[in-house]
Length: 444
Image (tube, rainbow, N blue to C red; front, side):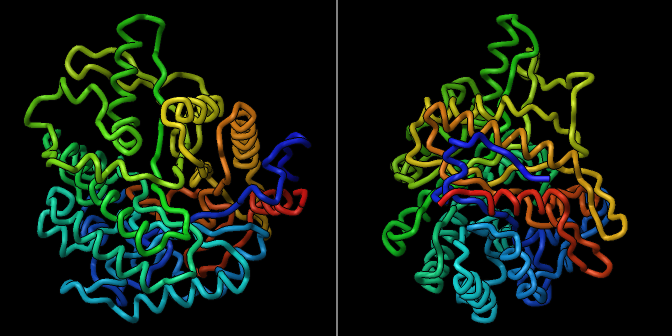
C-alpha cells in the first residue's frame, strides 16, 4: 500500500518537505531530569486524565532517543518536528540546566548527521510549574520569561536547527487551559481565556524578535491549529453565528499576527473578558514571520445560540475518527485557500495532520487502513490547495508514534508507529510503511 498523488504534483518534488512530528511531554518521560510542568500537576489531579495516567514515562524517548532517531531515518522523511521542554532546559532562577540542554544538543547533532532537517517548537504546552504559580499565562511577565528562554535555547543550539516555531496551538493553551479548563492548568472562566491568549501572542512576538536577531538563517514562525466552522443551515442566523465562532476560535490567533489587530468580535465582548493590551503590543505580535504552521484535523458545525451567540452541534451519520472528530478533507482545502486569501503568508507548512484510530497489533502487524484512508484523502486535499496557489512547502504527519494524548491519556493512538507501552517496543504501522513508500516515490 502506498499513498498516491497526481504525477504532476509539486508534492512529489524533492523540494517539498515531508516529516513526522512529536512533542516533548507526550513522548519524553525522563521526569526526574527536569523541573515539574503544569501537565505533571494536571495529571496528578484526580479526574483530569481519562485513564488516570501521566507523562512520567510516556514513550521513554529521553532514554531511547538514539533508537528513535534510527526509526525516523528508516521512514525516509526529510524532517523531524520536535518540541523543547522548557522545564528541562531552564532552572527556576533563570539559569540554564546544562544537562537538559545537552540532551537536546546531542539529539540535534544526531539528526543533522543523518541529514534530517530539524523543526523546533519552543513551546508545546509544558509550562514550568514554578511559572504557573506566579500566574502562568495570566501573568504578562511570563511572556518575557519566554523571551529569555528562547534566547538561551537559540544561543545553545547554534546552527543545528532548520526552522523554529515559537508556539504550538496557543488556542489550546488559552481556551482549553484557561477558559474551559479541560487542559492544564485547568482554570475555568471566560474572563481568563482572552487574557491568556494575549500574553501567549505577546510571547510569540517577543520570541520572534530574538529569532530575527540571533537566528536569522532559520525559518522562524508559529504553529496555529484551525478547526474551520461551517454553518448548520443556510439561515442568516446560523451563518452569522459561524462567523462569530471562526473569529473566536480560529482568527483570534491568526489575525493579530498578520494584521496587527484582533477580529471585530473583540468590540462585542464584555469588558471583563477583554485582554489587557499595552501600547506597542500589537506591533510586537505582528512581527514578520517566515512561515505559518497549520495543524488541521477536522471541522466544526455551528448554529445560532441566544445566550452564547454560537453553539457547536454534531452531525449524525458522518465518518469519524476514534477521538470523535469528523473526517472531512474538503475543509482542509477550504481552510488553506481561505488563509492564503486573508493573510498571504510567505509559506505554509502543514505541521500536524493525522487520525486517532483504535489500532491493534496482530502477529507484529498493525493494519490501520482507516488511517491510511485519512492520510490519502488529506494529502490530496493539500495538493488541491497548492494547485489553487497556496504556498504549502511541507507536510508533517502527526504523529511519529503513539504517545500520551493529553487529557485522553494513552487511550488514543495517532502514531504511524505503534508503541507497546509495557515493553516500549516500536512497530511501524501499515500507514507508516505507506508514508515511507511516498518518500521513495518522489522525483528529484
